[in-house]
Length: 373
Ligand SMILES: [Mg+2]
Image 1: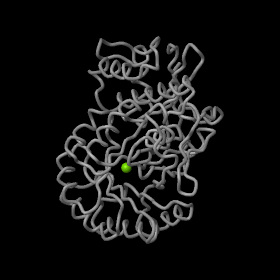
Image 2: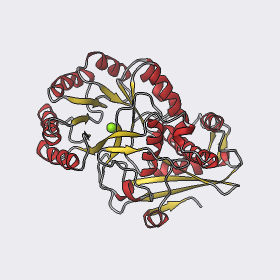
Image 3: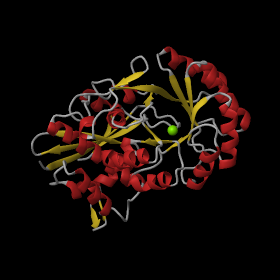
Image 4: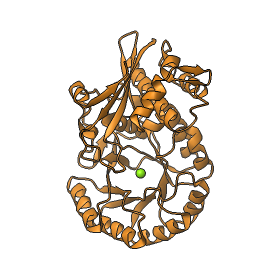
């Protein structure tokens, strides 16, 4: 089997708001082969930047666009192709957007692998340990505690037993932060799980004070309290915090995760398949399980990435929660014919070959803003 075409499509909803939500646009990477198969991948990054990394022409041996490197290769050889992409982009890669473009391609290669062998990805990733996973509704904070409580009630009524609230306006001042978390607890009720995603807003000492204050509201974890580069801060905080510390969504690739894992910096490592691909997510799974920490998916884009996260998380030993983005964006819910969403607060793991999703071409057509020629 040989790769004959790598086609990028950028989709966007008509009105993009200034908020920290990546379900407003998407870059799909569609890899076609000489035996008529197509694998689909997605990156969570700036879609136009990802497309540029794939489209770019050859510059020199360690600065090259990814399409030119991959045409004619066998997509089943995922480890070798990951190394090839990493080495041949060292001048423009190693982290960040180049890694996310590699992740989208790798996701498409694995989708092809599943279709080629007619097996669901969870089987090819080592075997499913969980047929269904408890979901948490993942959404942004309201404008204040009262509005956040309303949002919490909405998702509890929809059947979720856990809700995560994130980002703005957390971090404005202590009173705002406490008001938001108390609102979250009121909305979710005594029996539900409340998860708090701070959005990288504090220094370690302030984060520790907040962790103690939020512990009174029995939060399940405190996510991304610090700047992602503050590895030492995370290690210091995790040693002292009364609540579990979660992070990882900013990281792209194994080299980016390695200092967090080696330093035992986190309780919960959050891995985004659309930023790490399956190939590096398998390395991260193994390393995190080795140190006895926990894994969760990160996902805030389309059903393609949600399906990828679901296959991977189903193979992790100590899986306890799945991030289910409940943003109202049609890109989150309508891009594929299959609905990759919780039912009664639980996610069922797809069992069809590959990722187990098929794109709704009418939806793609009406949301397409640009594509590779
Ligand atoms: Mg987050």
